[in-house]
Image 1 (cartoon, rainbow, N blue to C red):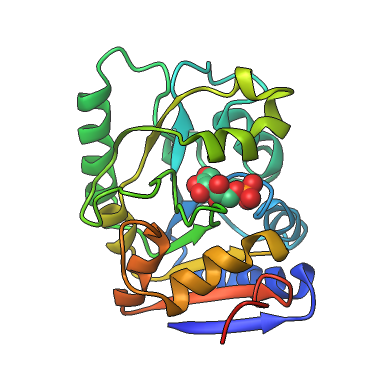
Image 2: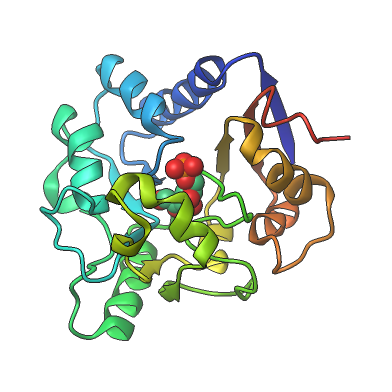
Length: 238
Ligand code: F6R
């Protein structure tokens, strides 16, 4: 596990942006795993300003809320369109997010896994981390071997994400998320974390026992993982 600590979120983000730019140059048909939330906002901003060629790339997002239509402002489809997809030359047919309106969720999840395999697997997976250690929406107690499936959000995550919905009551209870096993199959995992409120989850993920109680701790067993942190997020590391 490589841990890179930078004075600011901007500086840490620049490293991730350069990694992605380098990958797209070296492998124009790269497969990228993408995340949503506050953490990668600066990353998408930097990437769109770099004017990279995305025409051969394929993307898979980690997760989507169940029951939220793709054009709704709180959906991750909408988030990705606004912050990245509409600014770059990605082919629409190579953009993938779980279908939060799927009538048959188990078969939608199996299809998502099959699409990732058919694309040749994920070259670089961008990750954020929840204050409870979740990656994707693999909440504490998730199986470390899990694949894409429906998950129930914890009250903690629904409180954390209430800022996107106006109130906690409006945050959906269920999501479709890649599993920890799915994430661990990516060839390179790049986890970004900023701010003091992520410090405990980061310390447990990087230096604590590997446990389903902190799903990000599974990354200790990944052969190529980079944590990009600002100083406050790194403040509880030993
Ligand atoms: C989002 C995702 C989540 C977030 C995490 C942190 O696609 O998979 O794991 O990365 O909840 O969210 P923020 O960045 O909003 O603190």
